[in-house]
Structures are given as structure tokens and as C-alpha cells.
Length: 333
Ligand code: PEP
Ligand code: MN
Image (tube, rainbow, N blue to C red):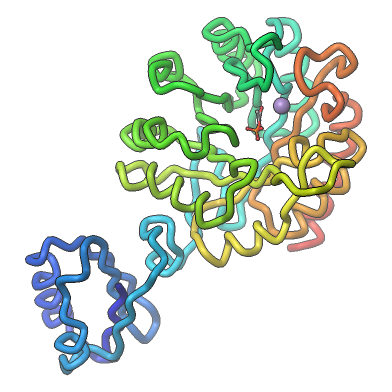
């Protein structure tokens, strides 16, 4: 529920109204606009008598809102959230490029790629250590050894690392990880989301294969409700009837999410298309659509990658994509 206060309402009047809301067990979020103060109420607002509230001399209007995502909602937090990853800011006009292999395969592989993507302008290194594979017979990742290799690569290059968690029991292994990714297949693993909500880690939450934006925002809400506001959303394509591409990149989601939420939105054109040649145009389109960052799979030898070779760029290809994305960003200034 939202209550808009009349212009000229004093701080004392506002505070006494807020105390009344709090006495009903509601959480109160105050947003000071140029002319009006907006009070967002979180909790069971069924106890609030709307007519009584509307009748108060300081209240301009009252609206029950149906959006069940309160913490992620832009209505209560009009400014863009800026998430900080080791000094790299994302959101609110700040753009970051995340690049690296689908999976960490060896120390040499991750170090080689880390140096190359950094030289091209990437500001974070990705690499899966726990891989959610469709087949149990496929490469499942190097687990704790993979995380160790990522941390070595961070030490060498200074790039913060992004890697996926599949099970909350593995959290102790992620202590030094800078960004914990929740993959598409775990977007609605609510127990995992709740656990991550109790950490202060930056969480990159990917949209599920067949989930709508409200469901994505409700999953972000699970994390934020636990007290962790460091959430970055990721559009990575959704399942449609199209078969030429691995998924269908929903770029309208970027613009829609920016309306609905204050959280930063990143686009992953690699998983969205599944085709290396399509990564460049879609990365550029994502930047043009206002994405706060992109995440791209890069492999030193895509033909022999243990996972997602067909969508992986070579470091040379990434050089070009990164430069072109930066040109789009420049043009948008
Ligand atoms: C990944 O980023 O490595 C990954 C598995 O992506 P998604 O969860 O989007 O399929
Ligand atoms: Mn992948």
C-alpha cells in the first residue's frame, strides 16, 4: 500500500502517521519527492482502514498496490540501485562487462582467458565451477578446485569473480567469491534464495527458462526480504517455439524491468542465443536497450570447450565485441 502525503505536511505529522503504521506491525518506507512524500507500507496492510486514512487531513491519496515485490519495486525506491563489486559499480548509469568461460576447466585456461578479457575491457571474470548440466554424464565442473582457480585468476588480474552456486550447503566455498550467480534453473529454488538473503554477497539472479518478469522479481524479493539488497538481475533468454536460437532474447525485458524495479539489469547474449555469431549484435542491442552490463562467454579454444563451445567467443572475437559495445555506450552519452 502507498500513501501520498499532501504538500506542506510537517515532519512531525509524517512521523506520527508512521508511528501509527508501525504500531500495526507494518514496515514503513519513506520516499521524499520534490513536492510530495510517499510512504510505502510493507506487511499485512489489511489492517489499515483505507477510508480512515484517506480522510486524514495530511493524506492526498492512498493506493493499494497489487505488486507483491515490495523491496525490489521502483515505486518505493525511485532511484536506480547501484551495486558495488570491489569498486566496480553497476546500475544507475554504470556499466560493467563480465566475461569468461562457461566452465573453469584448468588453471592455464582460466588465467589465459582472464588476461585476455581484461585487456579487452572486461571488468569481471565469470566461470562456472558448479555446472547445472542437462545430462548427468556431462562435465559437472571442478567444484572447489574451480573456485580456487578463479581466486588465483583474481589474484593475477585483479578481476572480481562471478560463479554459480547450486546448493546452499556449498556456501562456505563461496566466502571469497565476489558475485554469486543463481542460474536460470535455480531461479525458483526458494530455499537457496532465502539462504543468499542472509548473506551480504552480491547476487546475480538469472531469469528462469520459462519464467515471467513478475516471477523473476519475486525471486529477487526472496533474497531482499532476508536483508540482502545486493541483487543484479540477468536476462538470459527464454524458451519459445523458435529453434534456430537456443533461447529467445527478451530485450523488452530490460526496458520493462527498468520501469518495474530499481535493481540493475544485465544481459547474457551467449545463453540467450547459443550461437557465437549472434553474440555481437545482441550484445550491442542489449547495451542500446539500456542494460547495466553484459555477460559473455569467452573460451580460448571454443571447439574443445567442455561446455557451451558453440556460443563461446574466442578472445579475438571478444576484443571486437567489447570495443563495439563500448562504442554504443559512448554514443548513448
Ligand atoms: C551459465 O551462466 O553458465 C549458465 C548455466 O547460465 P543459465 O543459468 O542462464 O543457463
Ligand atoms: Mn554456459
